[in-house]
Amino acid sequence: MMTREEYIESLRKLNLQVYFMGKKIDNPVDHPVIRPSLNSLAMTYELAQHDEYKELMTAKSHLTGKTINRFCHIHQNTTDLMNKVKMQRLLGQKTASCFQRCVGMDAFNAIYSTTYDMDQELGTEYHKRFVKYLEMVQERDLVVDGAMTDPKGDRNLSLHNNPTQISTFVLWRCAKMVLWCAELRRIKQVP
Image 1 (cartoon, one colour):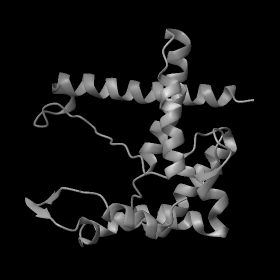
Image 2: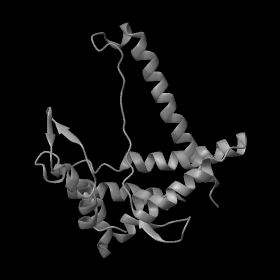
Image 3: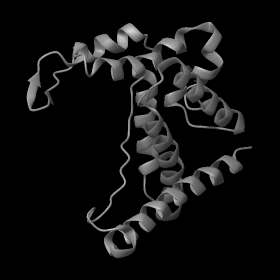
């Protein structure tokens, strides 16, 4: 697993093209507006190295048997889910900020079970390919992030006068519920 310092150095090696407030930033890693967010994310690496937090911050990969950062882990049981919540609370206490990895972890877990179901039903190989990608992410201890959005339609209209907003709201809520139910179903199937 990477250390905090290794993570930050890995960012320095990237050929990032970052613009902020219309201006190109030559060194985004040390930029005063970006750095606090980067520090919060780096805390996910730092705490995984501390013996007192290893139970919360790390897990054993069901794919490789190796110890990995919990943010790269597929939940296997209710203990994993409880440790995930405790880990998030710990990081919230330590950073007082978003630490950028939660949505990626949740997406990984949803994609893992969804691709498995798809392959069973459709005869595809999405799950096999996803597992190969997941193993690479676990091995390299990469940050996988996601994005959340709340589309609004015409923001000048209130909800009851905005059919685009109503249908989009229902669509997003249903999609989130489907992902949550798929994850619960998968967890219940774990022996």
